[in-house]
Image (cartoon, rainbow, N blue to C red; front, side, top):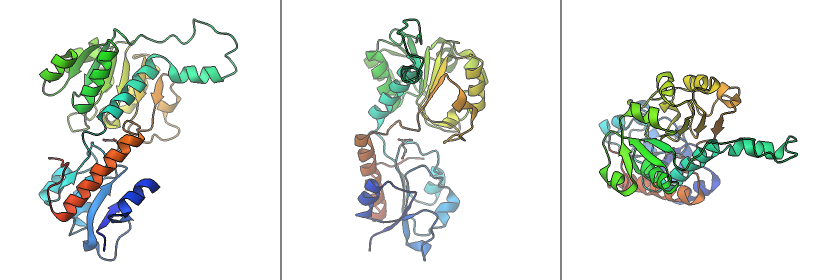
Length: 311
Ligand code: 8YV
């Protein structure tokens, strides 16, 4: 009998991968005996709190497909002796690539340009339309110099950008390798042409960017959020974008996510949105799934997870 795992819906390819090793059933459907459930698998970020853990007395492991575990109460899991695993170190390049994609798209009007190029208005070439802002030679301010932030810095260096960053602890090796400079949060906001969020969502970063911080930014600046929607106060960002207090925003994540279809953010022209695509490449998804499945297997065997989350 294969170990019983509860998961949110998996696409067919991954459903097959996991089905080879586990009996995967949808979260929310109670098995006859909850004590049969040995693992919880979070694919699309469903919330896992202590109460949910307590519903399964034999729970041996919680595996998260992805790095961010803000939807899992990791301390509650530790208190119950249940290890939590995630998938670090295999999605940094893909997520950094997408960060640059949003940065370039907002700076160079890629989305509005696409719309215009397809529309009835494009009859004659006019060199004066849709002028973007330069990327090369501009200042990027990276909030969160972890693995992903470091890959963003590497790309920014290749674009000839000046690199500022803010992180709890300075990263001298990144400074040496990529010419990045640690600055306090306020000067990062006021000196950057692009403020890029690559930090985890924690108590300290929830609502990190609101009205006050947006007003500290240059009116020509662009905000890129690749972290979690909750790092930005959505209503206050909408106000700043509508009032032209900042130039534009590129958002891979929002709060709430997805946004209600009539949300104000969706009607703003100076926003480029993607639906949480940071790590969404075929190659990266396969690496993530492998790590997530390895964590599940180890937890069920009762051995140390290869990719544990330390509370
Ligand atoms: C995934 C993510 O898209 O790693 C993260 O924190 O948010 C993304 O890489 C997500 O975990 C989907 O499973």
